[in-house]
Image 1 (cartoon, one colour):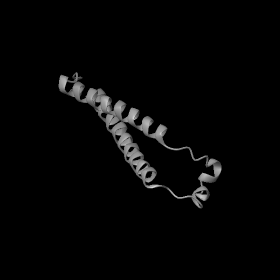
Image 2 (cartoon, one colour; image 1 turned 90 degrees about the vertical axis):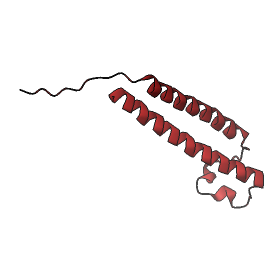
Image 3 (cartoon, rainbow, N blue to C red; image 1 turned 180 degrees about the vertical axis):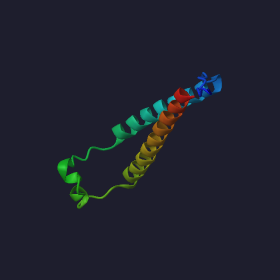
Image 4 (cartoon, rainbow, N blue to C red; image 1 turned 180 degrees about the horizontal axis):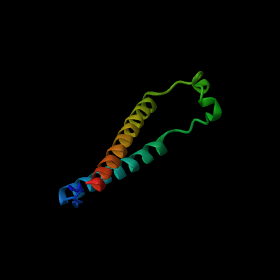
Length: 95
């Protein structure tokens, strides 16, 4: 009778180093994101900001529009690095 089994191998130094680099990038991105959110000017939109009614009579200045765009890019990168780190960590555990 043939027995099928999976030999558990420990991840190597390169895999652990790569995971640590991803975690450091994730932490730095989180700190940058916190700083960007704190730089934003308070709008006080409240519930009216959900439908966009609060920006009906206001305009964004160039610096604030650029800050909003930069924050959006950092959020997208943060989500991507979180997903990548999670999937890579799952790959290392299953390896």
